Length: 377
Image (cartoon, rainbow, N blue to C red; front, top):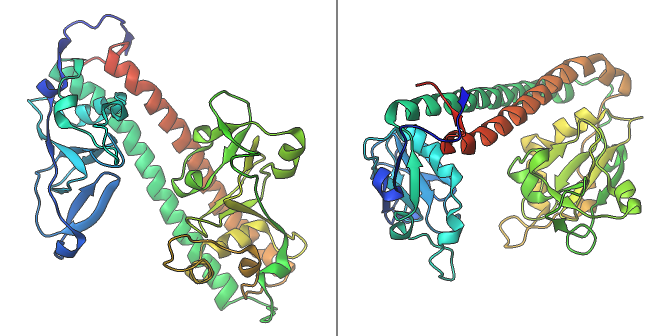
């Protein structure tokens, strides 16, 4: 790569000159037939059908609701009416255009209706500058290689998590020694506290305060620490609600049961949509408590106490702690601790690498798309 603030050989045109967008097609869930064709909605795949509207590879951006977020599909798909899809790439590289679309804030092109809506005719008029096809391919290659590595690490973590769950079931359900069958979760929890009021005591602010706040959306969307919002809290509240190593954070509203394991002290607090669970380390190692929270039986318990299919899901901490489960003796836990720690350390290492690669990719995209950084074609 070479730096060049004045790209040579790039052409000026309008967005509609390099990609023609088309509104997606209606398809109610009741009319989806059994099939393997993904139905592309504004947030990604929303179901499967037996017919496609669009040949792959293809790109969609959110038209209604989640405006402008680009999604890439390698194979044929059905473009739902909540998206715009690229009907004609005008001879440009599809993967390059996918990354190129990340530099736009399409929310500014909201058509003004009650529900945010994107009009294709408006975005077709956006002026752009793009590189020639060979350089497009080179840029796409650089960014795709980063995404491929990120995807590989995510898949490795899924495999490792499945290994940990299988090992957990074997060691704690099938073969556990000295197990008391009459215990409750509350017997091995030292504390379970909800967080700071999100508006009054832990507001999200634009400026860098040095302190971040973990929210439900950060847990449910797997946002990394650098993407958490900044907050302003008193010294007393920071000390009381700081996230520390071995804390387990669990959503109690909206998406009850989704959890986050804190593997190192963080300069962050958590809001009141979450509950912080701290293990009684004289009875259970925190990693085993975290493993329990990821089992299908425990998730079923959370679903049962959170209102099931009600509009406002809400988990009560007392009912959470009433879950019937007994851990084996600490001596038995110590025998098998190393196996779980080894798996978790690998997962954590992968998370950190994903974070580093994601930041590198996100930093490179605007630089590559503006010509500030050039790639040899």
